[in-house]
Image (cartoon, rainbow, N blue to C red; front, side, top):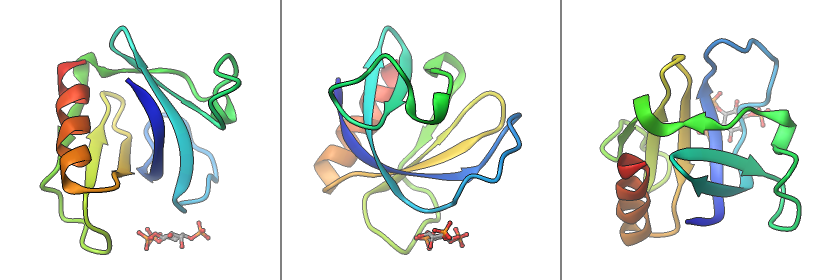
Length: 104
Ligand code: I3P
């Protein structure tokens, strides 16, 4: 329940920052219904950009989103209105990850 994924912030919720909209390869850790992002696998105590963990309880995943530039991209919408795009390496991983995130 952890591994690298390319992530892009599509819509930012509460936090208003001037974060880049580019794709970043982040180490994602899913633990007890919370998703954290880290720069690499070695240091998972300090989140990437000090971003808070995402509680997946009230998140929605969507693999059939409108994103056309890459294949196997799914969307995660959080309760504060943020939207993240994740790029999986193939269709199977995309669906597996979607399922994992849906399941918390
Ligand atoms: C972004 C970067 C992303 C691109 C995004 C750009 O620029 O080129 O790859 O998203 O387009 O803003 P920057 O690195 O300067 O933040 P796509 O790969 O989805 O095109 P967008 O703002 O139209 O989403």
